Image (cartoon, rainbow, N blue to C red; front, side):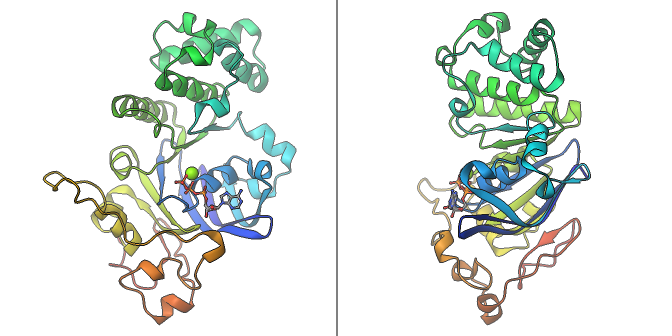
Length: 318
Ligand SMILES: Nc1ncnc2c1ncn2[C@@H]1O[C@H](COP(=O)(O)OP(=O)(O)OP(=O)(O)O)[C@@H](O)[C@H]1O
Ligand SMILES: [Mg+2]
């Protein structure tokens, strides 16, 4: 396994927004991390990339085994060395990753100079090569440009180039295409999936879009209110969702022939950290909830399928 997250918990000050997060990912695989707004996707990304200290957070329990090393036990300095070099992070807003007053080429070059120790000349050659692989036309001219001179789709490709420049084994991409139009979104997803297959990278793709998950991902981890609901191979998850929350998410995917405006979403809302209910956090919205669900946190099963539900829709089989 490239990455194995087991029973991860995160605290920020006195609140505990994440607990019981579990999923695993191998090289050459794409894992979709899904769930409604507030389900804990971005905090999970920060935990995996060692960036929790930036928001005053820390891992309080569980393990994040990355290629044999438990990131939860690393010191900040060692984590920083891994980040960028072995784990690349792509954020939703390219401008948080880019310096507005520095030319594009220099911003990408610095990653391979820092992490791979390349000379200025070798780093630029690598940057040009990466931009070409990401299908950026006129890569040499783009290197001389400033971020504001590029379109949103081009900026997002540059951020992906920055994440790739250190030759990482794992990329965590937090909604890399949400701000882009549908065509550009499809191009970027295609580029990312090709890179994963060709280079044997692992990719964690955070998205709201179950359609993208069905098309691009090998595995899916569904989060709800800061906990894992279900993590499965993608085919099994869509064909036989086991957690009622997964089934509800799949029901929200627009289908052909659906009347316009028929899309409703799941009734109710994800609770905030301050209002996480006892027992299974999904119970107030769950049609299958019983007294057991209201009182007792469902344990997470281990193995290929990870499920936290007292009354699954059906017993999972992969
Ligand atoms: N810095 C913070 N301090 C306290 N609570 C936080 C902090 N950041 C996030 N949270 C809470 O943790 C929970 C998970 O947030 P997170 O941002 O990970 O959700 P998300 O799944 O990424 O949502 P979205 O789809 O809107 O990006 C939310 O209830 C959120 O309010
Ligand atoms: Mg988020």
